Length: 235
Ligand code: GRF
Image (cartoon, rainbow, N blue to C red; front, top):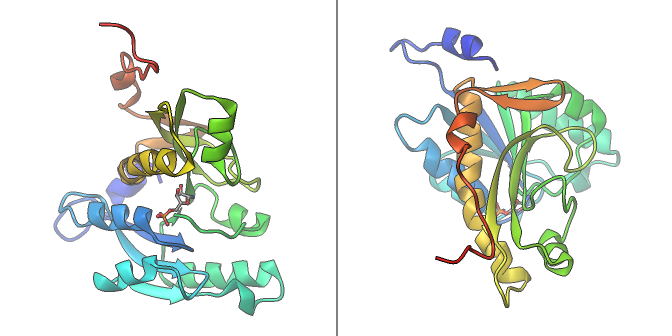
């Protein structure tokens, strides 16, 4: 959504309307929780209208219910074809008039028709610095590759898995003795900062997809002197 489009969606109090989010989950939903917490801030420009899980035991459902966010379970197992599952998701999202879908540990691959329909209104968080380490077991593969810096990425979704214009990334050091679990925990902590930031940038109309890449108004120059160097320089 452009800044102008969002500015034109103003509520009765004259403030820009809040972006209506849906969060799709399969698991514990700690990223969902980070978005719930961000949306609880009075000035945050988005709110969560709907949480959808593809399985009954997704722990994040309880997080949503606790703060009275509408939840739906759309079980992939109830559908013989992926397209029918995707269509059921789309119908629920349309019915809730969703502006932006946030995948947050949603463990189903969405088909090309769904992705095209929701193009640039569908984002994902991935626990690696894309385009490195797409797919599963990212932390184990990062450790095996011997990288010194790991991280996470929020990106627009395209038909290929873990591909699409990159909106924001956070980097963390890989430390001696790291295993998959503590590296995952270090990255996850930053995911919880990064996802609300990416959503806020979109909701403020500052994110533009141009020629398959993201341009962010205002923010880029602030990063000019930032660096994470690992191992850290002496002194
Ligand atoms: C996160 O690591 C996210 O990057 C990945 O799945 C995990 C979901 O964790 N896509 P949670 O359910 O948000 O705790």
